[in-house]
Length: 288
Image 1 (cartoon, rainbow, N blue to C red):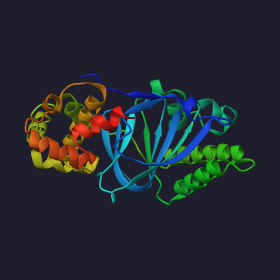
Image 2: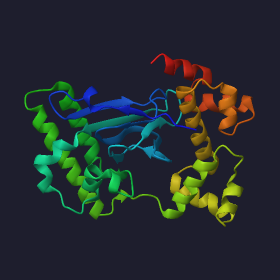
Image 3: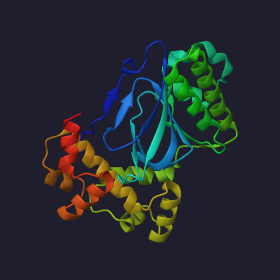
């Protein structure tokens, strides 16, 4: 199956300055996407999930992601219920905005390597956690400056971005960031990605990797923040959304393609995860 990935172009956002800042309450309307600019995204409020490349990452307030050009991702709230919000601050910028400031960054900085040479890096993104709200406060100020656009706002946004990137560079050295998952977890997640449409269970995956099911479930929950079944359901529903957006395949066939034969259960699960029925989801997407 071919996954639909929307490409967002920077020309939609940039005007007099190669930096754009916004604050969004995430929903299920935005599809998986990539972009031709660099993005720093931070969870400002609530919790949910970040679908990034082949992974589903649980997120909460204070989590920050550095997302280079070419990395596919989308944020989703944990539930469509009104009290389950997920607010994301985004700072997007062109790589060229950093050229006058490059001498402030060290050559071995993983942050800088990811921004300037994303195709050469093993990991396709970096995750940090803002323990003391330092970066969250910076995002508040940057968003305010961008909206008000008072005299000199361009300088304030540029220097704030440089300051933020320097803080991330320091965090690398202090080991205050979340590195890419271990090879073992990579193998497990890759296996789930390739077999999610089959009748896989925690037991069958544990057997495949020569682990007891109890040990596997403990490790999986510790590494992802989700149970195996929660992770599998999120993957399947995300694939359903992509197929509803990009094909005319019947809803019944889509359910079967991702591993659901019980249509009553499938409809209930889809509504629970997205807040709408599969038919409504497809109609809403077509109206965008």
